[in-house]
Image (tube, rainbow, N blue to C red; front, side, top):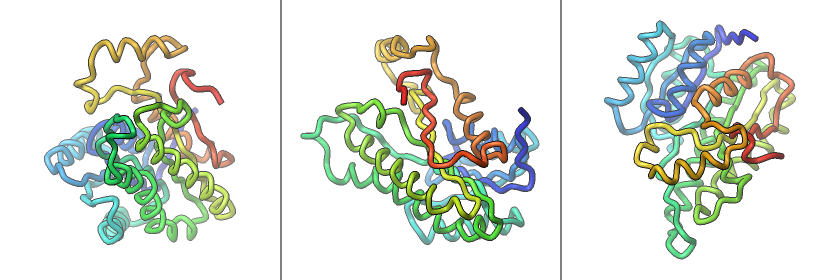
Length: 252
């Protein structure tokens, strides 16, 4: 199956590194104009842009705090001006620190940060881009969840709660936006090692690998290919779904 996203504009937040960057590059390879987003690390953002351009892909680099409504509004205006078209593919991928702690050690501030990244940010981003999608009667909103919700991971309640709220929001928006030709889905990856996991203890990595039924680690390509498919016309009849990409660790 060849996936083409020509004449589409895609915004992937948190795309200066990790899975966000891999997703953005894949959407660019499919023909979309890709808006790379970062918040604080300009050097890393510029390196991501160099990677995009090295492959001859169309796109640009845009700085914004994706939990701030005004910053999002300005970013969306800049993207749509540069691309010459409205954003029709939205992939909220930005995240912050994810400390694993017992309930006694969590603070509400940590919980609030999870809510801001996983519920507030998709909400604000959708509000800022929905007019263009409705106008075109075509749109794709693809959230990045996590298997931690399906697996009910303990000592991780702030992150799990944020991802659970994100999942519920995805389901509600799928029903609301379906009449406008807009699909809304959520991908729940397993542990896909990226730069942020470089310090993970070997024993922890080995223990996790033993729990993967297919017998191998997930790769960024496992996620990026799923995002590209959900963004395509081939997935136009798929909405309100959780797609677990974790080698069978959770089965629904």
